[in-house]
Image 1 (cartoon, rainbow, N blue to C red):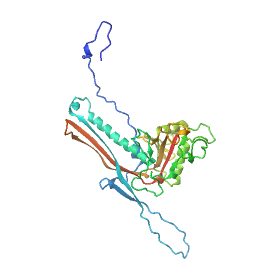
Image 2: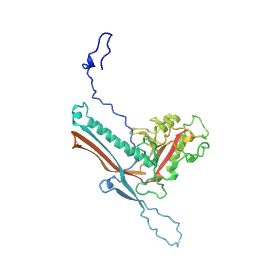
Image 3: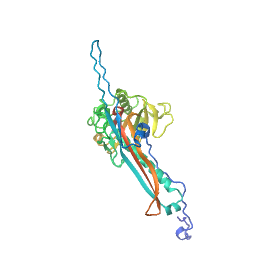
Image 4: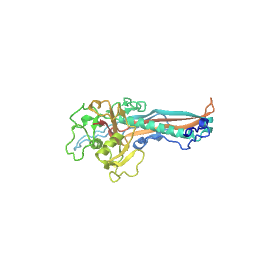
Length: 357
């Protein structure tokens, strides 16, 4: 680009003596935090990585206890060998090529940059898909449009009373779960959520506060005898904002033992939960930021809580390779991620669909 000149003093033609300088520093794109690795277990990873695409998991048998009186004839119970399966059936890939001439002329290592970005994309897609699955949804074109309810069972359900989304109806919080909300749309719609005003004593009649919602999620897990140790909660930035509006102490290091935070984790222990914030949770329609009772069945977000033992993930292929393009002077880099995920304990997962009141 030529410099500005005073009147009557022209620039050199085309500005060729003013060189364009390319910085060796590359602006990297922002990356979303991934949380699935922290909230799922890989207990079956070693069993499936080299032996096929299905693992059958045997459930602990249920034992009946009966009252005994002297002279009672004791009848031995036949044990049930009930099982369910985890199937490796999800795969994603990337492939790109770098031309030899472009590589020789480039001032940065573009192959390394692209490979790093591609690896992140695989991890991000995995995080989106697994978070949606354990919440009862499936991502539609990786969140480019609203997500949809999952209706495809992976293998076989872990509990016979689970739905096609592999979750228990009793562990899904909806508007009708809160008796204090007496106005607005139908009870099976999303929960209107707003920060409770300071000093308020009476329960609100048009919404639930974020603390009320999360306390209810904890109670449902308590009623299923889910261990306190190992519980987690994943919320989106909208819910985090409302939670902070209600009480800013939620990010105070002295309130909830925040400790050393990592990869989406914002609280190490709040009401028994490790709390994560993620942009990869399911969003239906316009998502949780859509207000108004007319949208409570078409536009909402989903948050999910559970236990480390509730969901298993396993990988069979996770590799990147480079080879020469036979049809040009270029290197091709490609990678594949083949994995499976399974809800093992639906009683240890609780979801809530909500939007802003």
